[in-house]
Amino acid sequence: MKAALGILGTLLVLAAAYFGMFRGWRNRQSRQADLAPLPVVPPESGAAKTRGTEGVYVATTAAGDWMDRIAVHELGVRSVADLAVSADGLIFHRQGAADVFIPADHLTGVRTDRGIAGKVTAEKSGLVVVTWTHDGHQFDTGFRPRRKADTAALTASISTLIGAQ
Image 1 (tube, rainbow, N blue to C red):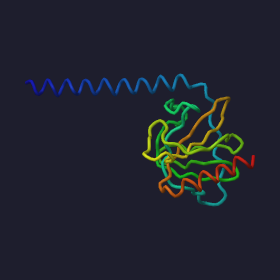
Image 2: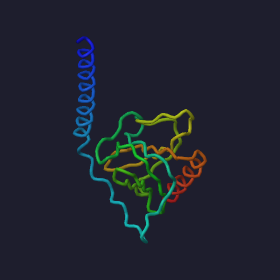
Image 3: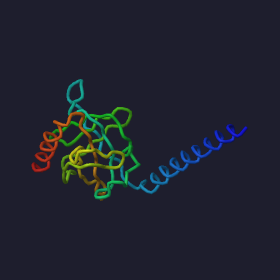
């Protein structure tokens, strides 16, 4: 009987914790509901999508606040992705979530960092963090390349794109 009550108590605590997280996420979405829809991903020329650097789309946060995750427009959804850099801008081709397009003229900076909401790495330059503007707000989007060797080249290509603007 004691074991059954212990199990039931544990399940109730877990259910309350999940409900609290769900409610917090929904409240965050309602606070951020005024954010305009994201730019539409430009049509691809040819049958296949242009693929870029493989990795993980970690999250988008308010610029300068690495823990303030953006919950609307699926920007806070972590997913396996590849990041394509083109003259039009950046396209995160995400699995299980909508693709994210950041036009080149919205990009304001790129750096490497140790962490962003949802991911902290052991090395200081484990994430590529892109700073961009949209609808009067400034954001940081984190991307973790699958191969460490891709980090410097990706950062350089984004810096070149920003400098070309």
